[in-house]
Image 1 (tube, rainbow, N blue to C red):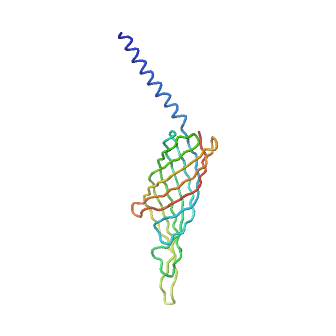
Image 2: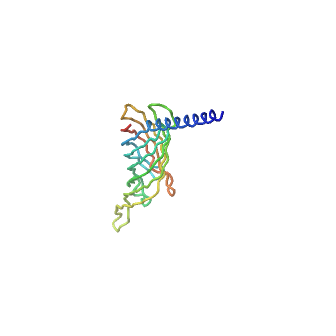
Image 3: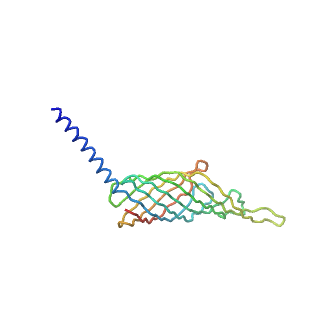
Length: 202
């Protein structure tokens, strides 16, 4: 009786071991590395006066641990025009350009279970190196003179995004992305949306 009980315990342990082993194998087989993902589209911000959207470009690499969890390294460069705070009534059109360069890490979670589709909201943290190119008017004895200046700002950025990707082959996928960044001091900036092309290693 004792031997049978011990044998049953060994069988249970063996079954648990096999389940863990095959689960690990399946997880390894589902891992995918996106060597590069390129996207471009419209870039804007809700926090500036008379803002005029321009374009952005983005490079990223993603590591998909399994069908649900992913981690990405990203760089986004985006621009938009707006009126600077030093602008005067003489400058009523957007004369100033904001250039954001954001380096960030992001965690993404796939909310659909489909062999070809991935729909992934994402959150993360990064660093924004921003450059302001602006023109403003100063009074002179003959009227006004226009001066150009440039300012730099480095700040923490918290990215949020939503990606929808469709696998068209073993290597290639296409998709769309919408996203924005949150700054603790300035609120939301860098709203962007555009198509994406992805090359993967499986």
